[in-house]
Length: 346
Image (cartoon, rainbow, N blue to C red; front, top):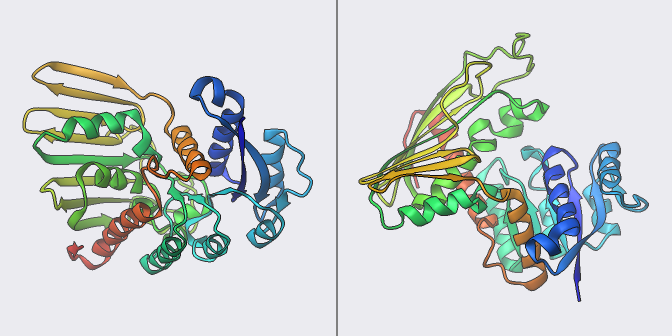
């Protein structure tokens, strides 16, 4: 007999929209394509802009009556979800989570999980005290390409690694302010930093340099008033494993491209070239092997999380809240290094 998992969404912007889509796929093709034995029931949509919450309900095709809420307190007081998807601007973390944790509701939270380490560590302590199932939005860990890289290098000697996330400035207002996003390293390129931790282990230290000066927030070419994040940065990380990685971050590119976003891994007898969420090339004594990205990673992540909620088996969750805190710590250390000029040790 098929089971049902009741879900609610806190934050009804673009990122939770992706989770909505993946939940809809569970109901549409979950049984036939993924051999799932559960379906999703939608019990609540929360956003300060009720029209956005209503838009979610309309998109799914469910009756919005009693399911639209302007604040998380009303949602939690009037619904009984089995799981919550939380995607809010980074500066809003810290107040909402304790109410979810106190009720013992498993949740998947988008990164970064906070903008300061104390908030994240305090929440982690509450989560551990409840032994609560959590997941964090580091979906790239679930990619077939990431797993291929991880399996391939486990017996290899890895020396240098280069990684990058280059592009423009996302349109949401909060992204362009350090106090509301944490900057590009913390809010966006944290995916590459997390992927590096997943592949190479924990960092020993990091030194990061960054600068501003290319982006003028009031210039019509950029049109991002209030902009104060770093235009670009370069982080050198020494991992405890001995691997040394240089990770570049840039949001100033308007045309002509930049470095390919992704990661290059240089082994003693092989080179891995990973294009962000696209493809992977491995060159070794056997020639060149080419791999395309398989099933979209957010869907794998979400199905894994909801399966864990239903079964209690969290072994398939590759990034829980504790992992998210470790990656946050690394990226916050990059910001600290930029501002102080110091090497930050862990």
